[in-house]
Length: 196
Image (cartoon, rainbow, N blue to C red):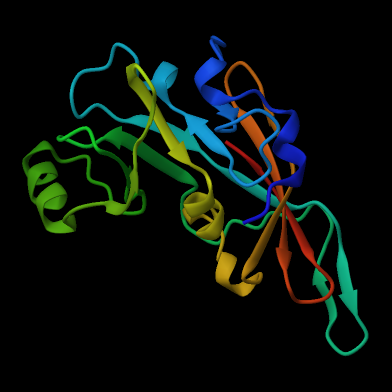
């Protein structure tokens, strides 16, 4: 992935923002990585506790070709799953962040069958990303965003969008962040905006 617009973000190890989820780079002015700090989101939670993240994705620009017509309609939702909820938790050994996709389309209101339903569905673990550390700060929980963008945050079929990833913009807010990505190399490039 290429992150030319991320050079304006603060180095993540120097950022003491109180925002729930923080975006940053490894070095000042770096344009070859985008990092996500989950420390504040997981702070004070017990071992194995998960933070739930709602992911929304939409095309930020329309795309049209003469032979196929509209490939993407501007501002159309791009999520292709039954749920846009993902969960993240620190692994038991503390070396990775595990990503879970809760199953939302099977439910029961019967207390006696709740255990059977939960047991029958199996694990909802879909990925594990290596945890990155800041020098001298072992409490921080940081991951690289490239894996999430490559998998469309597990709500978009990013493989259908293209193999190259070019981050156009990345901003953090007190309780969420936005990342705008161009996927290619197909023409026209497909621009997807994620809000997490």
